[in-house]
Structures are given as C-alpha cells and as structure tokens.
Length: 177
Image (cartoon, rainbow, N blue to C red; front, side, top):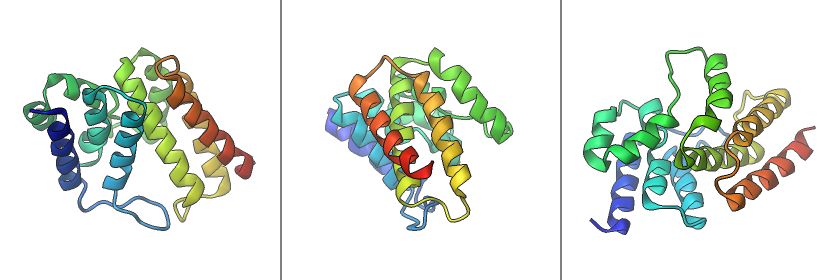
C-alpha cells in the first residue's frame, strides 16, 4: 500500500473513532481536527510514515473504544508500539498520569517523543486561543509548565519541532503570566 494511501486510511480510521468527540475549547471543534493537526506537524518536518500515522492514532486507545488489536490489524506492530508508548493508562489518577508522562518521556522511542512534542504544541495552541470554559488562568499556566516538562524530556529528536514548541510555549506563557 502506498504511503499516501496508508495515511488516508489512518485519517479515516481516526475520524471514525473520534466522530462523536469535540475539543474542550469554546469552539468545540471536532476532535479529529486535533489528531490531523498533530500528523500535519509531523509531516511538515518530514518524519517517517509510521510516525505520522501514530500521530493520527495517538489518542484512539486512550480516548475511544479502540483496542490495540485493531491498530495492529490495520496498521501493524510498529505503529501500535508507538501508539502504546504515548497512551496514558486511564485507570490511574490524573495526577499520576501527568507525573508518569514527565518521568517516562525521556525513555520513549524517537517516534513517540516526536508525537508527544507535536501533541503538546497543538494542545498549547488550543489552550492559548480557545481554552476550555472552566479553565482558570492558573490552570492554563500550570498546563503550560507541565507540557514544557514533558517536552524537555523529549528533546534531541527534532530541533525544528522543538523550536516550534518553544515559540508556542513562550507566546502563550507571556500572556498568562
């Protein structure tokens, strides 16, 4: 299957899995826009097809009824491996999940680190431009600082992506603090 076909297949898969979800911000955009934005960032900086597809699928296991077996069946063990690396264990309390992201990100594969950085860039942009209604400035600021800790553990895999994160982080934090 061609690279373009695989990426389109993953986009359609993600769209179907996230079809009833919306982002938390004021605009309530379809959630699938987020995973497409993550994949576009990865593609923009010329990452491999597997990493781009993992970007499209990075929230499917965590936030939908998708099973690891489905991802492996449709996209293979390599992509499943990256998706699993970036999937939080929702059975754990939120504070523990956030701490584990900071602690474990440096140990992840380069592909998983790239997906993490792209995901955090997109999240910061969303929080900066259209924060969730119930998020105070303190909560937004806390998220920005936590995201930076996660990304700091992922550094060394893509200078251009890391620089974009730094630019987005700095623009947002200047307005928050």
